[in-house]
Image (cartoon, rainbow, N blue to C red):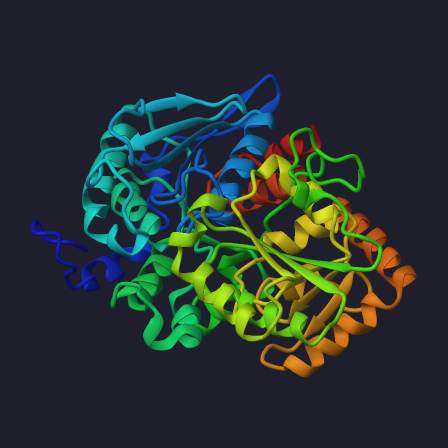
Length: 454
């Protein structure tokens, strides 16, 4: 925990009390309530750096923002009362914002009211926790669901005092990040140890993939306390519909028939492996690569990673076939994905990998590194192809093979859409999240089954 000078201090007392805190809510926590025969809960989502109102694709804003927004909307549609707590980054933003999707966003005054790198937010979690506790004392949630490890700190500090059961989703684990990034990892020094404490204190852990569940078990989390619930995809936005979105730019148009198109999407950070994609395209004539993500196109010249990738493309002689298009608005992303013959994902590691799922929902085949959550979403040889990381020749061969067989690409695309519909709708994700909540909070027998049936 932190002392009054915002220094991280020994958490042994918190650790010793963690096991007892998981069962204290029966005495002082608020119970869910039946309304019109349905089991509705008051749910506090805590997402300290990733606001559901943020624009995805910037350095610290990606899949977590989308996940929190879509899950909150889906749970709201199912009758639950949702408040999402995120750090205030703008002094002019209202403290509370009611979204069209039915949930509320609460901007927490913790730290300066401006954009701060998530690696610098840790000292402000005591203020964040203090706000949560004060707010929850006035209107107690049935359950608090923390997203990311720093949210877990604030949530545990506030919830333990009130006896509120907690669920933790890490979205990314420090041990995995450290393993792949080494000295380039800019996370706070105590992150890995703190994640173990947070995991022990939580009533339940939701992992977004089987790989993450394995990593949590390696940390010492009992498997019986882990639920695997994936992220989802908006099946109404990401569709196989071939009509371009109104306002879609030229890059969403199909290339000439002589050129195959590969699309890669993600934040412009080294771990996304766009340099691997560029090297692969250099070995494939008559193939162009579209890289989407990062700042708006006019600001790419100021982006260090964008310049590194452009320099690499120039050195390899493929600058005319590699196009960095910058940030693509979410409403136009389906058009861009559908313009691709193949969507390519080559990260060093990937906790979940929403882009692969969005491509599948658009009926576009995926070639991807066999890492992290991608191992769950892609069925190798059915919805796409998995390639071991750091095997560039295998990657080039896989792309060459799939691009030369249009009928196979079409079949994989159809299978991908079917899998996305069957497994990854946000409604299904919300139902599975409810089940995880039910294992963390005391409810009458059969109550959540009635809720799930509506």
